Length: 96
Figure (cartoon, rainbow, N blue to C red):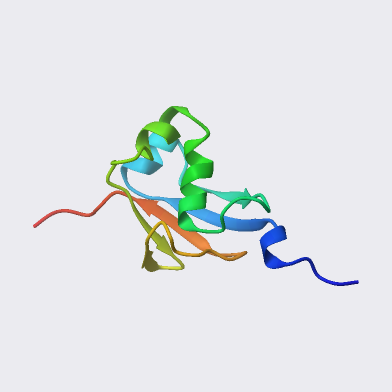
């Protein structure tokens, strides 16, 4: 028996929502499974969440100020994610 190529395996991620996004989504986090045919990137995560509609579509709409971290490291939409990664989604931090 051989293992399926990584591109054909679902990716399970732990999502963490911070600041106003926690309030908008009504949760501090969740487990998300990206289907085998979804892009295993931060952008793929955003697309999957945006497709839910409602607050997800509003807060993750193109042009909205949202930042990401994968395993506590700043990430971009093209950053790859792997099974078991933690992806944090948060608004930019401002202050003085």
